[in-house]
Length: 287
Image (cartoon, rainbow, N blue to C red; front, top):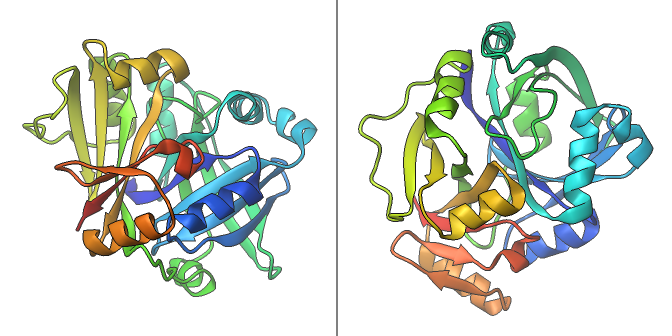
């Protein structure tokens, strides 16, 4: 059963540079740790149970041993940087794995994973990876935390973010077939789309939205030339934009300006220049 949004993954070739970039946005970034079975290393921007994961590959040969999961991440990092995937959390995820099998997509898991934190504590979870890889896909991968949520919050308390960010408000996902993708979210993940969907400000896309608490997932299918169509052509399906909630948009703008971060103000919020966020397209929105 899917219960909530867990985190967004931002693939970054050089983790130290990525951490520095996100600190310039006024976000508190902490060292995460290493995934021994994947050859990867990460850093965390924590809001609560929801967070951002900055992810890089430390040992390419080890990553390749994991098949498409590692190879696709390496391919992305060889050619790009930015939003690469997102994760939904739940429990008893075998039903979701079976749902992906029903659709002919297939799924690996649930299988055990862990990460060693810098303080030596071990985080443990179970993953379901649809289609062999979660990177730049029309679906998320799924996590069932073995480590209790109380430990997650006490070991990694919410950061003190100078930019007034309070959490992940949403993810916009670019897809090439809205009808087919809806089947994934309904049949495999058991989610029901909002009806009617909030009208898109972009007339060049069709959209469909899902809610998990305060988090909104919006699927975008381009219907004409424009930024969404360009993203689909360049990178394929996958996360297009990350929405970060802020308690005070004026404070957010002031911090970004003071740190020399380029952004544009729109009716929806503040859109960062992706070059300031390691290639990720980020919008700060009021909450």
